[in-house]
Image (tube, rainbow over all chains, first blue to last red; front, top):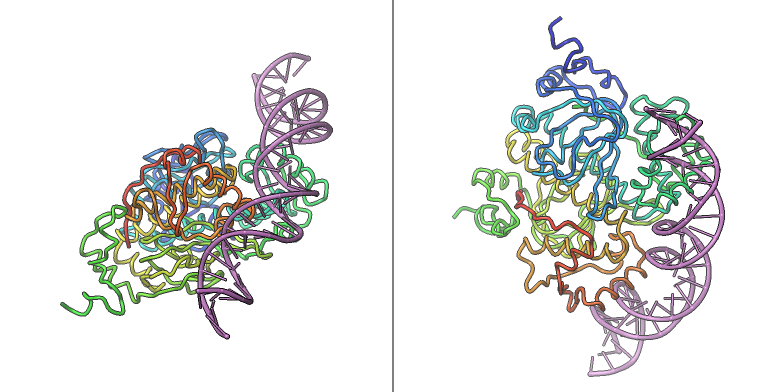
Length: 251
Length: 251
DNA sequence: CGTGTTCTTGATGCCTTTCAAAAAGGGTGG
DNA sequence: CCACCCTTTTTGAAAGGCATCAAGAACACG
């Protein structure tokens, strides 16, 4: 057993990455995984509430979220803040910031998170040496844009109740694909302020609508665990297409 | 002069593309441009109001918008529609739809448009054979996501007047980089319904806010030409950071 | 067990939506 | 060139969703 194959400064070796076993992810060749391993230079922890990438940062690294939740956000000069999308384990973190010269947004750890660190420059190596992976990185970028599209549609077209329903059903499906759901319940670490910032609603109105939906039996919340009491109804309330999501690459 | 070098079925040859002369775009090596030329299989016109890519389409091609305006949109099952972002000449059209298995959105021609057509499969060739271009394609994808981020922030955080100000100042800057602005004025082909769908506002409220801003002297509109009477004020009203935008690649 | 944060609840007002209909363009055919 | 029809834009009035202000309740933490 060589040094790269047991947990150390670099964490679990990529070939043994437990995330790969989740239904959310596609199989990958050993060669590709080994290449990913050579790109990874660190395994890092960031605590809840801290920025992983701060707005305007020019030397952002690329990460894969190994554990925990994070979110991308964008602030206006006067302090108003919009949460753009949430990041769950296996998601690529900071691709846009790595490609563009400066981050146009911030990324904050929602819970304590572990990150697989890929230096900014090696992203270019990946494009030169591993077109399959480069293609998949772009694919993941498009998937993220797709999620932002969804959120924009939600904030632009749905009312408060529908927005909440759309958000929790989407997170439910994503958590489910990661094996984080049991009995329709999953850990839900969002504060109401963060909910409000994601939904484009005021804190007060978010709270009122949130508790109304809970009173009406759409979901329950106990000990930080959100349980959907009727996922199908939730999807219908959100006026959402029920999409089946194919497995995605894990870089 | 060989057949590829004069306008024909494929339109103006890429090496002589007039768009490349605009300040919006970076210089590119002749080798890259020649490769782009080999990828281009057609030069196509789509009329205003028609879909370039329709929602759910599984075999979407990749395009570069050669002339005219278009927009990406997403509809809910009950018919509500959100315009996600606008596409101007030089923008890549359909990247997300080409990468993902099916288009999660539609793309509609806002005016009559001309498109440079790149078959879906050749996108993969590009990743294998031209990593520089692949990197730039991804870069353009991130740029588009960045614009959607902006719009989401606008719809989520700004009031009606601010949203309009933010939209027109952004379009103004993009048109300017394409040399489409003279005396602070540029062709503005949006209907109020489309404005409303982009801003996440009702048609009526859009109309009222739109004419209020015009009455207040923010801009004028005559003969389909929008003139910003005070661009700096417009940016301030939008509570927007004034960003300098670097030239981008033209594929 | 205090203290600061987060969540809840009530009251008030305004921004935005909805309903409805008139006005203004734009294109076509007589 | 004008009558006619259809689409787009404008305007008014009323209702409601959501924001804001304010303060109490619940919760976390040292």
